[in-house]
Amino acid sequence: MHKQNKQNKKHAKKLTAAALAAAAALTLSACGSADDPAPAGAGGFGDVSAEPKTKAATVLDRPFTKPDLVLKDTEGKAYDFRAQTKGKPTLVYFGYTHCPDVCPLTMSNIAVAKKKLPKADQDKLQVVFVTTDPERDTSAELAKWLPSAGDASFTGLTGDFPTIQAGARQLGIGIDPPKKEKDGSVVSMHGAQVIAFSPKTDQGYVLYGEDTSTEDYAKDLPKLIKGERP
Image (cartoon, rainbow, N blue to C red):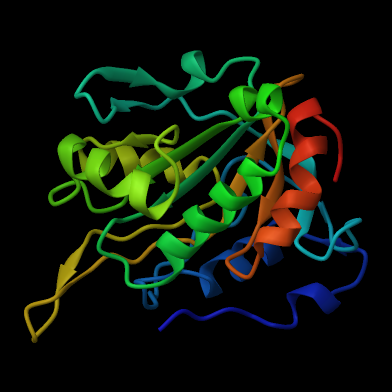
């Protein structure tokens, strides 16, 4: 189902933007795989540190700019991602509610780690889930799914697919249009990275892969909330 380059953590000290884009392509999930990698240099980043202070975090030397992304939230209201997360520690993930494994696991891991924070820090942290399957993931569907898969405080966003895809690509995350399989199931292929944005700079400066555990997030969240390097 999901594919990941297990040797990513053994790279030399620096990776080029092209190398990171290639690694991102290998984590495209359908949860499944795809042949459409994110373009090299997508999002405008350069070198990244391959020897982070935790095994899970990849700290970007040239962070991502927040995408200019306006979608609809779980109440059907317009949500301007850049404006409404300004100055707030934010985690963003692109996935879909019918995903059988990685998407709900990622949301659950973040939710459990968040609950370990002091209440004040819990209130500061913004977690945004952007669907890659907007035809099925309506505002109402996201409103039902997020509390069970993650946390009722998480923000769910939906909209038209081209807008979502363009926003993901600004972060170097490749997603493909949902595709109906021969057995009638619908597969949504997407990058499985979580991007952390700093409350100080509003830039995406830390990347997490699909193997990131609850313990990894619990260890890093206190620093991410302050805009520090994990």
